[in-house]
Image (cartoon, rainbow, N blue to C red; front, side):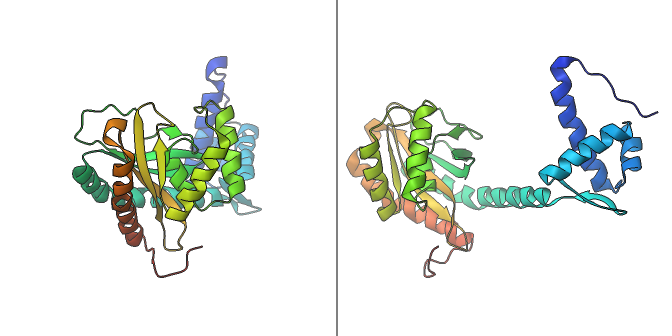
Length: 261
């Protein structure tokens, strides 16, 4: 018999989420009409309709009269994004390992996600240095080398917005004039630095990774303690990091001879 279970107040939101996922799974199995969904999930028709309608509104499902529900465009978008992220990690991994081996420092891979730098991979170096980053971490764009590299192609207006938004969210204090001047230099040189701006005594060199269209789809960075990252060494590392990022980019279809967007 179809019924609506009454969850404790503390788990109501979680149960609603799970029901929504159950509806998506049911539609994927071919249960496309409201009566089928209600029976399969042991819900009243009104509850099944409410959940399905919310999913249609967000693009996770689509609805056609007389045909019923089907998977929506949002799932195609997410599936493509998940595939591209998986491909990026797999393609980049051996190059990250090689860079960590030659530099002896920690190497990261990240992407731009919801106006933050999302860390997808990390290869520790051989130096006994504790770098607090973890796979799955989200860090401010404006205070990390990885984040700056990810937004090198963005307009200066976006840089301005991210800097002040990050400052308001608790990023380490920085001088906006100095920061903007550095960003202009980074964009010209095709790489970015973190000069102990995100983590005390940690510096890094970062460079963007591009896809076949020439768009920045990720970035890599080499991070180490400031004692191993003099200005001269960071300058020397820049070429090595850019070269590694370009190798990854080529494997993603980037053509350095083509005009970048």
